[in-house]
Length: 214
Image (tube, rainbow, N blue to C red; front, side, top):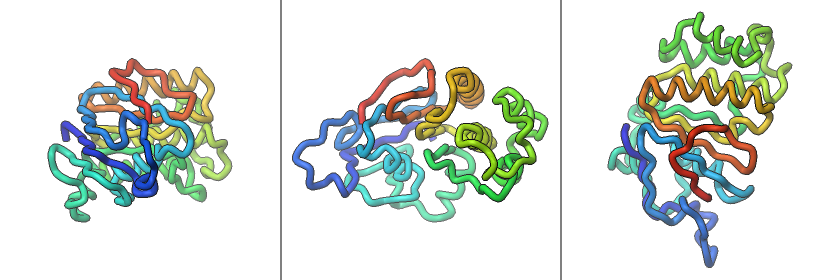
């Protein structure tokens, strides 16, 4: 996947608004593989909805979203499965981890499906992110910031052309944010992938090609 395009896309719940001032909604927008994009948003402007539309979890929007020119509303289940396995990774704001499983088990679920990373490399990420001692700890006993780091590792355990991160550092200190940014940048550059980060304030510090206002 090389280009994601949005053509006059707008959440249906916003359809009755008189004016929409946005660089994303109701615009013609291209997200290109290899670019780093920051989407800044105020609360309630549809940031998480945007991520769910791209990932195919929701389709309650007007307009058109295309992957390499193909309207995603025409994708079938098998096509979505392949895209989510090989082309598109997502770190949701609510993380979507399994609290009853350990940190390692949460990551292993993804990696066992893709076979993308060796256990040794995953352990190195845990160490770099300061959560090596949480390897066998149930997620429910970790802080939200620790869970965010686990969710990042899980998101990286697959090949991708684009990775979307919805408020990935909302509960992280600056140092862990810098470590996360370094790991993410290295992985994306290996694959020539695009990075799209959303934020309502504190954001991941990357060398962004462009910043958009949602």
